[in-house]
Image 1 (cartoon, rainbow, N blue to C red):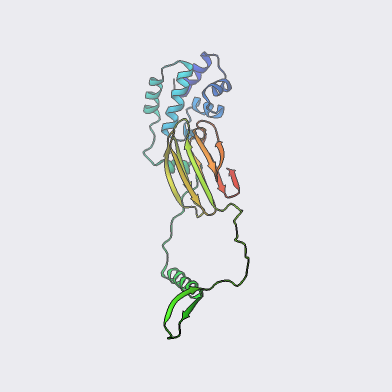
Image 2: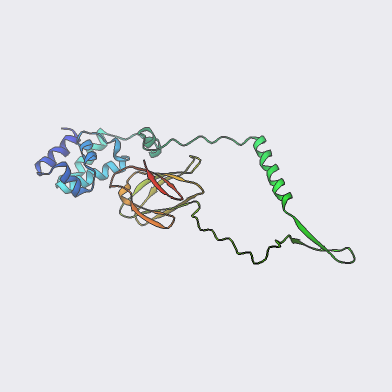
Length: 239
């Protein structure tokens, strides 16, 4: 009997439907069906697959250690980075290859800096002996000019906090460059910022709390669910 068949037989013997087991384990019903069919691709990695098996075994009161041993023997994971596996299963976008900056581009940047510096005007105060006293920045002649106060939210400030477990997280900036790939455990937080947007992949969405620009969005999915989200200064979209 395969590992998946053993899980299904134990659930049936316990008199539980897939939906009932999902409610008690907080694992999606669709994912439980895949596990019972020996499909562990969408678990988010070896660690999460083992966690699901351990949770189901505890609820069904069966030998979790034996099931985990069989998982190791029958479904030994490839020794590859988590990011590669998620990309392979369309759970994340492949990081874009960084192109070297050409000398022509560097020259253009340098020329722009020179123009900006040259455009700053100064008034030089000179005394009667033609001695330079000090440069004074040119002041506006407009009186009673009120200071400009920014009222629109700019940029993206994202805080991810582990609340009840461990999850792998991948972060891409607005240029599609990967800026973070790692795990966030319970009680730990990571802060990410970008001027335009952040693309986020959370391997175990039910254990990561999301805060966007000071607004608490809570967790964005269920235990074991892989969630992909785009965050901008005005909000977030999933998918």
